[in-house]
Image (tube, rainbow, N blue to C red):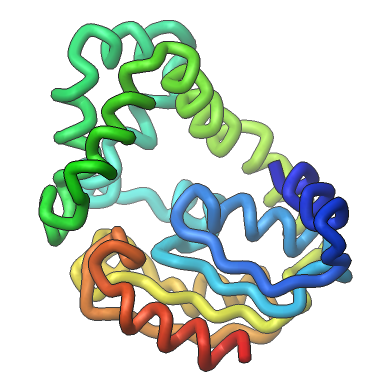
Length: 210
């Protein structure tokens, strides 16, 4: 996915660019910045610690809170079949667990999420992303660690004050192990930063990227 995004940016005429990713997108952004250091000028990551750090530091608290990490990585078609039996039950549990509950999502957004979760092919792709995070992505991250490869551009990591990442991890310290220039702090929200705290996020983006 990181390679695909670099190629898209090149086709659009951008050899270098600033990059901001949230959640799964932030994990792709991490890989993109490591594999294509000449492309990324500045990197902003929202509400994650590195995938390897989160798996290696898993506690009972984290496992209970991020239950889908361990459910969706089960071999196909088990999680896909379970979700297909009750997609809306899964969706409400998945996106409604956080600080803001369902209030973070407009009716239009919720309908779009439900449409995708109800589509077997899309749900399979979602599971495959999580399966990759628990397999080949960890291999790549361990290889980077062994070789001393790190993110070379400036990194700004933001995470929700009321979220699981803040409760279970130390994002700045975690990212300092895989990047050289790291800053970051919490925002007054839960996991869904763009939906819950758009104004503070835009202000931080303008400061960091401009």
